[in-house]
Image 1 (cartoon, rainbow, N blue to C red):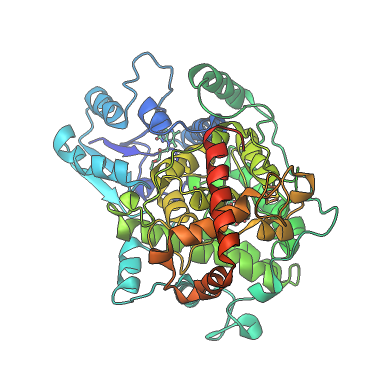
Image 2: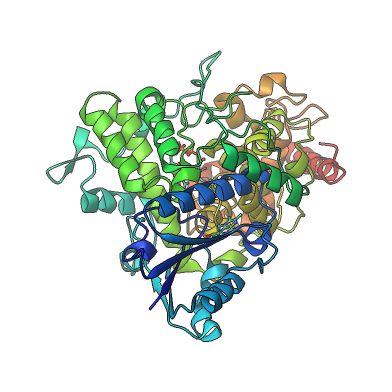
Length: 511
Ligand code: FAD
Ligand code: DLZ
Ligand code: SF4
């Protein structure tokens, strides 16, 4: 009898566990573009267009392999606009007797899926997503009994388990981590290499028209849509990265340059997260570049750590902390998300740059997400739920399993230290050192009070002051608290007053 294999928009891998035993004769592959998935947050237009186009291309590849694919487009008049509705319809019309799924990436949908067997009246088999390199159960075991979770130790275990950059049982080069050699400020005139822009075919063009029409109110422009929408195209970008960009990845990992959204980053997160690239393949390709002498170890190790370490780690945190995690608000932050996050209308050049890139490309790199928009949101005390919804909506690589621990935990310290051992709080001095934004800014990173003072500076001290009770005991902040306490009380007072002015201007949309 017939079985339905459901493939979600971020499951576009031919090796997907839900397709493992799919048989052209007895299997029906179901894929559906539905409003419920496209609007649970108002995703960036480019994110929706990327996924719909990649889904349509993947469906065609499956058909070429001989599979029967039932693909429901968003504008199909029969479309019920929900995944359960489309499964119900497919079951009724095909007479299928079972459903097979690979576990999904968000609690919201996973919860719903748990009820499907009852609701649909047929067996629903949910399989592990083995594209990840650490199963949720393995992560649960790893973290059991550990008081303090540290990504670095998890990462070393993953290096050993998957035998990545190892010599016998030891790390190649004699160290697990070469970050001391990484993270240089940008040299004057630093520019990233020219990136590949894929030609838009008929499928992509019609998706772009559909998205423009149906999602007009969502953030972003669809101009210069450059995304890879097939695994082959994603491979071309990966190849360019490994050959031309990876050698400098470590050096400029934390640098920020005006007008250079990409610098030496890989831009592959959307492709890995949607299934067009497999993490293990990416890791092996980077590893080979080092073994063959085509890229230095500090770059290769740093890059692999992001994928084998951080990416798997945040997923483990998400699934072992949910469902409570999404509600955490350790610092009781409650300010609404400022309008500038949607418009980029602000005199703060670094914020304008990071948000502007986001609106234009559905992308900004890690340090912009963490130390500019994230840091600002934390210092200004913005409600984590609103900040997290923003990150989930605006980036083409965003799914809750990866977005939430990064935003709530790493950027906002909203989980009180599960993800990060201290808040990633920084003043304008950090941004000035790591970027060239301040030179072209109305504000001055060297000033803390007065009309020209960089807003990050007063907010930074005010943040520490406001949160003394929750943060002052953290040994990693003791130097900063000591500096604050030593400060002349008149100066402290002036800083507090200026922070109030900054927050007032922020609310008035005048920052
Ligand atoms: P590169 O800098 O080239 O890094 C290589 C790869 O490593 C990435 O493609 C990604 O797969 C992986 N990686 C790097 N850092 C992380 C990390 N912290 N967590 C997980 N994977 C990582 N990443 C997402 O994929 N989706 C998100 O929704 C997301 N939200 C974020 C929100 C905040 C507040 C912060 C601080 C980070 C977030 N990240 C997220 C992590 C990281 O910023 C992006 O993975 C990265 O910027 C993607 O660009 P890239 O492919 O050029 O990455
Ligand atoms: C993000 C997304 C969007 C925008 N649209 C769809 C869709 O129409 N159909 C679909 O199957 N998946 C979509 N997705 C991806 C899902 O939201 C994703 O699978 C879940 O959030 C779980 O990670
Ligand atoms: Fe950003 Fe402050 Fe520098 Fe302006 S002066 S770019 S607001 S860090």
